[in-house]
Length: 314
Ligand SMILES: Cc1cc2nc3c(=O)[nH]c(=O)nc-3n(C[C@H](O)[C@H](O)[C@H](O)COP(=O)(O)O)c2cc1C
Image (cartoon, rainbow, N blue to C red):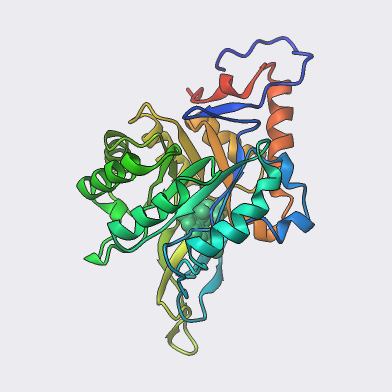
């Protein structure tokens, strides 16, 4: 496997990874929307152990989100149609970013950005450019109001265009977060790279639907919702593998991580870092178990660092 030796390495393995010039002390972060801005979780776990926190998506003005019900349980996961409810970038900078400052620089802060139009994305990116955010993650799964319901991330030319514009004004490295609701993830990964993205992350949720058969009604008021959790993990691993082999920029893998083995699959498939999403709801200590499990795996396999196993699957 990779360059790992058969011998037992006595020193603790080096868990650090580099994403577009930003060093993370370990490759484990939270997935956007599943950890808020850390305030509630800070009472339950030691946030300073994380490589990075990725915040809930923020838009230029407050968004109310979708009508309820907007979450539902499924086999091995959940559906959500929260609709990116958030207080807007001004409140976010004053309240959430200020709160997160206590964890920097040991734990990096990655701000997730959403919008309905190019202008909305650019406004948020511009507002964030003079803050201490370490990186920006752009959620291109939002419906593009100027292109019907098609998300920005579903058309390669649109994705490349918005990536170029964002990268022109962003002062932090830009991660484009890809939607899995496409035919060829490799094509979209290449479009983000050619637009100048510093990294890509994937996968966002898979569009699903649930029906209450007794009431003969949609379970979610929005009818459709995004599927996340262990049920999507094998799909996510396949997509991360395909994306990582299509581009040279770093890839951040996510989708259904519940334990260290799930995270290791993403690393072996070619991801340089991983994000834990809705399993944070089930067990707030999931990220800690994943960090410990990766370290234990590297020691058992005689690896001096996590970088040795990135993309090592044969
Ligand atoms: C309740 C909820 C809210 C989410 N909000 C966002 C968001 O604001 N921005 C974003 O890019 N992704 C959002 N996501 C997607 C997750 O970050 C992640 O990509 C997806 O859930 C797959 O990971 P998981 O299976 O580990 O949850 C959200 C997911 C859930 C479950």
